[in-house]
Image (cartoon, rainbow, N blue to C red):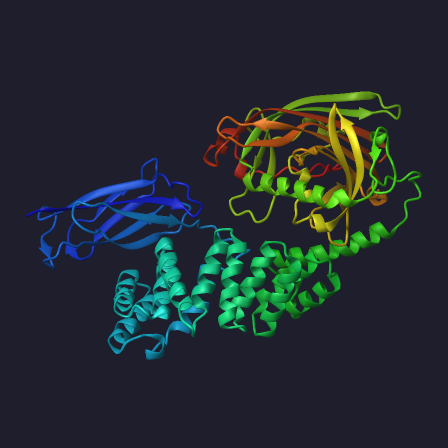
Length: 619
């Protein structure tokens, strides 16, 4: 009698997107049969049928059961290895396989670091952990195959026998999940480690914190640090001084830009014996809080006499930020006698506010910032990769305000979120209509480069609001629309977002102040005007004014609408030159990661500058 077994499945990324064209190998384990090879279809799915009696020459068991090993490979992803039970004849077994990118994210704990930290804790288990005498032999052999020989087929087989026999051994199942994770079975690992965590939650004596640590790290890999933090807190309830749990909880808060809690947990991790990485992360947390002196002390301890020039990029970036802070303090401490009437949106009125109905008090400010912050957070969370047609009109102005030299150009303007992005934000690219990376041709004729307008409202993101001062000014009609007017000014001591202005070999950090016009019904920013917080005489930068008008944009493939720049005007008074750029955007489209090549080699190009460069030194 012939029996048919249908083996099918779907291959996705961690985010759930179908992986098309992945190579799938299916190898029977419990019987002799042919190994089959094929690729996933446009839905990321695969399927094949095995018939006992026709395809197999030897069956070990009279019962109808087949176990198969699935090996999935795809360029750009780590190999996945899954042992699957094909179930009963005539009923499809649907394997769910999630592939991880081969690109290491330097902001999170690596898989190798997780395995090396957790596995030694679970190597020596006994009756107190729920491991039976019969299961101990298989457990030891499974550990040897996993950690010493690196053979997934044997390791998972032995450890699987242990968990089938000793179902209450949560630590055994945790080790199985760790082995599955190491060999590429993300979903299997998540299933088994979660089951181990549930077993521990049901016990009065929890015992091992490891399942919660693993689940927390897996959530950070999925860019869900808030969920990860919850698991780390559970681990600390079991073991309050667990070094890895403290370190990774600190990391999760760092990724969420919760600088204070991040610094506290990382400090506890260091006190409990964490390695140098925890100290470097604490440096970042201290910088986020504006505690530059403490950050300098921790970075000095981290370096331990080593030359900063030989350190990896993240270390050099932290050092550079400290140096930039010293330079910024010196720059913003200087008076600017050239400026007779300094711009101060928080305290002084401007011509743009001539029809303003002044606010009676600051009570509405909290609700306004909360509503706008929610909108901005949703914008950056859901914003798709987009392209638009950009028209740029560049002018050199005389002191009378009239243009004496002009340049007109057209580009494709792309906004794309990096694959391993942390926090709000995206890259903005300018491409020629001819599909090459584009820079305005007028740079060589003394014009300037300006960009970065789509993400200008990021200063109102809840993560960055504490780094600025806000003031509710009142109500004003804007093109017939009622609006609230809010003034803002960045705080140089703590601001994480800043611009760069380059002139020759001199480069200085720029901070902003300005005005935002907010729709009272939707809490949407409809206009944003910004100026320099302070002129920079060192680079002869007297003024930099950006005025952005936003409009609601609907995309064909999306139900959600987004508010994007429609018109932008930038005026710069630099080195006795008055320059003005006007940008208009239209033909907005959504594009996928794979279709970026239609616009040129975006991945290899440099994102456009988010502040204008001096005409003599374009970025």
